[in-house]
Amino acid sequence: MPLLELARLLPDRHSPRVADAYVEVITFASADEIVAMLKVMFEEDWMGLPVWARNLAFRLACLQRPQDVDLLHAAASDLRSFGPDWDSIAEELHRRADSLDTGRNPHNA
Image 1 (spheres, helix red, strand yellow):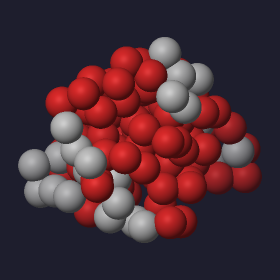
Image 2 (cartoon, rainbow, N blue to C red):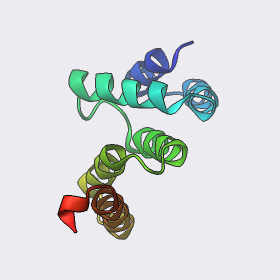
Image 3 (cartoon, helix red, strand yellow):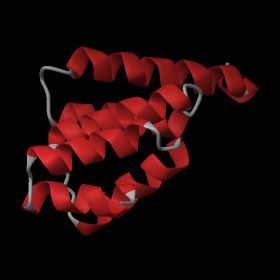
């Protein structure tokens, strides 16, 4: 089953079987697939994806795209929405993204 379909099942039919399938599929998904799924899920229902599933999605996408400033900022902002447990991680992601952005843009120096 595609990642987006599994993500849509999580809030309504949460079961160990659906969660296991989601974890298996997202583990081997590309960053493009994960980011696309997150975009659709957030457009359909911002709170529709359980926190554990969105944290996993952002984590795996950020690991695949460690230099993606926009993705790092999005992940950090999402973590802040469900903190404060993850605020320090969100701050580090924002710092990393800002550092990357400054390093790439000579006009920011």
